[in-house]
Image 1 (cartoon, rainbow, N blue to C red):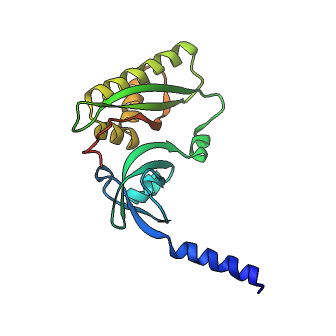
Image 2 (cartoon, rainbow, N blue to C red; image 1 turned 60 degrees about the horizontal axis):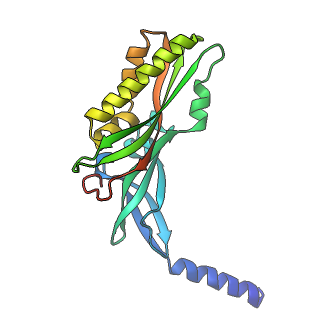
Image 3 (cartoon, rainbow, N blue to C red; image 1 turned 90 degrees about the vertical axis):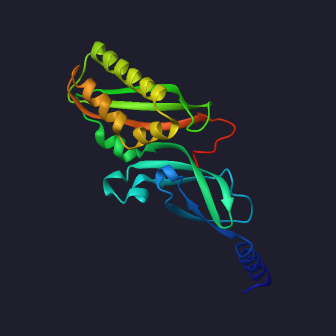
Length: 207
């Protein structure tokens, strides 16, 4: 081995020796579950970690739900996180598409009260409904109105933690399904994505 290659190898080894490993955990409202081990030679606060709902629940049917957590506090080698959004895998969404059916999307920005604060989170919510057959424009408009009403009512009446849990675990999607099927036969209804647009400056309970 040449001196140059040996020097590069030594530098690479030294870099890894200088890194510290952190155990990353979900927030309490997602079970305080260990989801990752990450190395870093600097500050990890602010780093976003991706996991699936399956990693938390061990329910194989939830592998298509991706969750994003942002590290907001470090204690020793333990990195604590806050929820930062979720979405579905592309493969799962593609599997839902059928010919001669309708896909109805709704994107809504809502304000949701923080659990121990008078302040609010701003959250972008993407809902989707798949019909059994092709729906008329008027029917799609009526279903989209149901999406908006239910999501805005939930945002008004639930705290941040409650709202996020109902989005991710499918309760809001189920309520949209139950009302929308009266308008037109529905095959699937989901909250396929959430994203935190802004959050209160000081958040204590959502960790």
